[in-house]
Length: 113
Length: 115
Picture 1 (cartoon, each protein chain N blue to C red):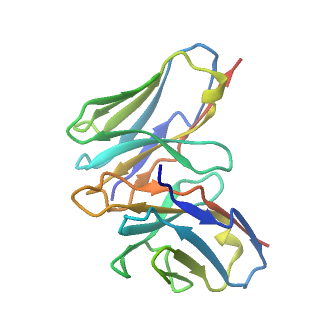
Picture 2 (picture 1 turned 135 degrees about the vertical axis):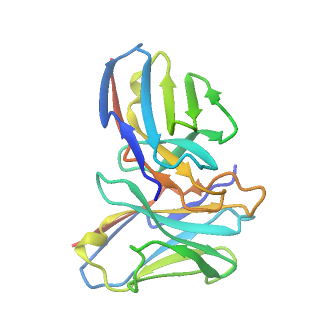
Picture 3 (picture 1 turned 90 degrees about the vertical axis):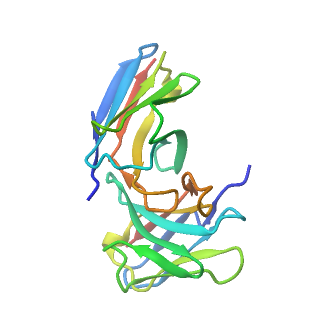
C-alpha cells in the first residue's frame, strides 16, 4: 500500500529565504506526482505535476524534482514571500490519471516578513 | 478556465441527519471522485465514479455513503445518518478518461460540521 510522508510537518522562515520541502513515497511504481497548495480552510490548488519519466518541473519561483527510484520528491521555493505561507501537499498518482491520489499530510509553511 | 464547483461551501447539520453534498464536475470529464480531509489530517480518497457506477471505493466509504449522478451535470455525495466523525472538508474532483488523463481537478470543498 502506497504511503506518502512529508517532512517537516511545519516550517517557519524569514522572507527572502530559499527553502526545500520534502516528500517521500514507499512504492516507486508511480504514474506521476503532484504538489498542491492549501490555504487555511480552503481547497487544493495544483502547483506542479511531474510525470514519472521526468526529473523536474519549474513554475516561476517553484521547482519540483522527482527521484522515482529512491521514492523522493522535493519542492524548492526560491526567494520566499509572506504570500507563500500555506500548507503544501504532495500527492502520488499510483497508476493513471483516473486512479485515487495518495496524499501526504503536508508541510505548513510560514514566511515571516 | 473550466473548474469544478461545489455547493454548499459550508453545511452544518445535527447528528443523525442526512446530508447531500453537490458537485458540478468539468463538463467533458468522465471520472468523478470524492475525497475528505478531517481537520489536521491527510486528504483521503472516498470513492470514484465512472459510467454511472462506482469504479473504486475506500474502506471509509461504507453503507452510510452513496453517490449519484442525477443528471448530466451534477455529482452528489449523500451521507445517510451523519456522525460527529463525519465532520470534515469534502472535496469533489474530476478527470478526463484515458489516455488524456494526467490528474484530477479539485473543487473548493464543502466544510461539513456535524453537531
